[in-house]
Length: 162
Image (cartoon, rainbow, N blue to C red; front, side, top):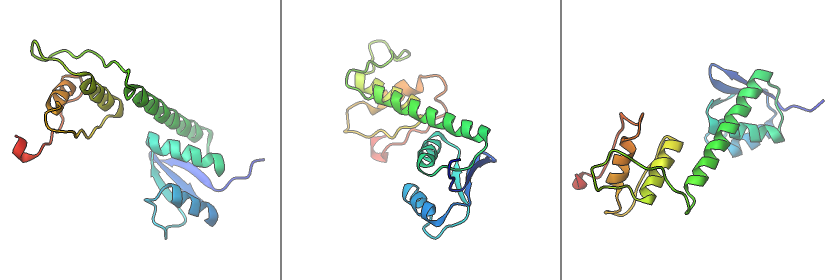
């Protein structure tokens, strides 16, 4: 039988970790710095792919009691995180060829690095884009907004650039 260091369960779409020994709580707080140093007892985490990946990694060192269905959910979240990371790594390669974009005025085109930013945004579902003036943030945004499912969206720029 494998020694366990507490219990991890999915309750109301949140991960709840309970009954962990103090030395494990200290390690947990190193991995998740948003947990206050004084907190003890119960620890709550969102059920998103990034937290699933981190919790899964933590469980390799400190196994927890969990139900079979919770374990499957945790592993699926970790796999989703790893797939997203792999997709973003492919997009960021110098030899990446972005998808063709349609819908711009005739004669206008999206540059390779702008297409990468669009594909990265679609893979990540968020992007903060900042570069030198004149490199095409407006075209990148226009190309992104032409994609299905990307509106409504907020485009924020410095007021003097309007």
